[in-house]
Length: 258
Image (cartoon, rainbow, N blue to C red; front, side):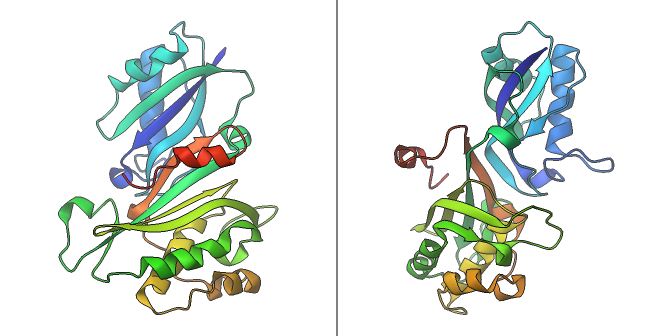
């Protein structure tokens, strides 16, 4: 059997998340059904991240095993002909046996978007957290700088997370404004359950002026109650994944805005 690696983009608005479910449509089963039609093999996908309902991806990484003779780089075009318009394989290749994204991915980039305007924009309804507040991106950037490095992020994990350690390393964190859009981009070696959405909710309160830009203090407390709200899912994007350890030259490939 061969192992094929896919890079997948999807609009999460119409899905119950990435992970296959019995009573709702998920991205995983949508893609698995298309790959089964293409190869004739029973397909189980293993992904880098189990994104929640409503969360989007530009660079989800997943693998599957197949006996199909289709060249690795041709799977993307072949399977896209069988997928709905809300899911698209951006790239494909054959990788070594034993490759698993949850073990082999060394860093991931997430983006959270706010659309800040007194007038709601229908286009951003399912693609950003729409708010009439302007948000102070400078204060938010100041706070984001505090999460760089290795920290215990227990205060930014939602109930239900089961991990051996809540320590994670953040390689890059920034908040920038472009017109009505404010984007929080973060790159780390791993993320806890709802960690990015809780970070985004905390930054949102800081941008409103409702909270001081003291992320270091929240980290030190290690209690979920000290952090802000959990931001809604529609503003969150899994942007890209790195197989190699994140290095300084990787900064050149960080995508800040759509």
